[in-house]
Length: 101
Image (cartoon, rainbow, N blue to C red):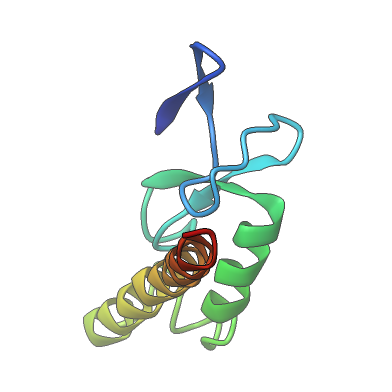
């Protein structure tokens, strides 16, 4: 699990936006619950956005019984959804930094 120091002590935080309120942190199954035990902390908002992309896949294609081709495609979409959210945060941060210079 990812922990970062916040206010001098470690806390679990969203890997996308940095939210560290424990009331809104959820553990996201990176490749879907039926495909992997690998989880990362996301806030409810980021989790919803990433899961929305994953849920565009047919349920059979994201199940544990999916073909290896379907599983690979689902993994690519899953990682892409995480990267999209992270990229948006980075773009916003960069734009904010330029405006404050």
